[in-house]
Length: 367
Ligand code: BGC
Ligand code: ZN
Image 1 (tube, rainbow, N blue to C red):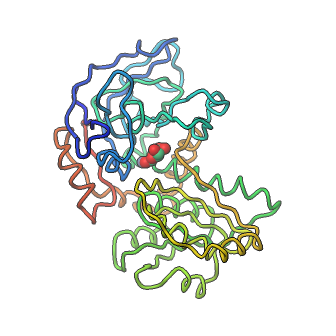
Image 2 (spheres, rainbow, N blue to C red):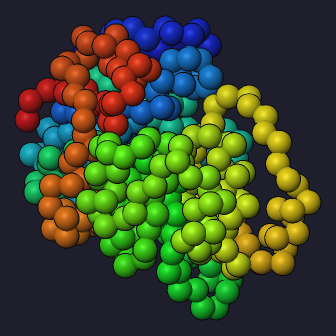
């Protein structure tokens, strides 16, 4: 079986590797689900793994198969599997448990261990191949009616967790009724977070560099959000003009913006950081001012990574609700298909160079 892989530690090592086809019996207890891969999305994480900024091969391999956003069809199931059957469309969670108490209760997304296991990212092979097998615990069914949104299930799960974390954390206030939210960044996580917040009836400002008109603005406005270009207005100006936000979901991939946004959050506000910033950039911040205002304003900063099974389910439910609320808008995120695993170089080129590509994904097979 073909697979798209990198040699961790070696920059720009993306290549085609060979894997043997897995089987349901690879998973003990009859719990195996064999999935034929149809489509796999790629994102900045895959690019940064290919830049050798992070990522490790599984034990016994000198390569790592990449791709963590999968969509496929169940081909065969073990005798104990009840949740899915052959012919079902599915996606799959990314993290696999380590040994902490959180891992043991199905919350590997909040593992307290330094080492984490992620399919396609760290110490476990990913989905950019023809078939994969996994325990039914990690397989998430996708309704046929959402087939056209395929690889968005995984990024949607990360957005779902980020928003959920804010609401859970804000229980500290006894009452929290956010009226105005900012989403900084209009990549897939920013746009999908915009969607989730709009579905909850919150006024949303989606802030990104690009000037209007552009596709990101069209999608954000399609969800009823206000899109503003940060090339035209600073965050401070936007706060001055429209009021400070109660919630900020930060998804720019820029630590400079993450810290800048700390300066405009409203009293009792919550800010969620979602970006994996792989570089070594340093930023200078007005430390006294931030410290003072965060204390006087009882503000909260939450980091949110990955997602578990429940976030996939709630994300998929919100994709369905979003689709009936603003028909046809979500799929505009899926801009840039690449045909087949053989085109791995083109896939990486588009990820690195194509500024217009909002979402690059590989069409692995028909189905
Ligand atoms: C993935 C997450 C993962 C994170 C950190 C993101 O690109 O979507 O599932 O936890 O990277 O590796
Ligand atoms: Zn990702």
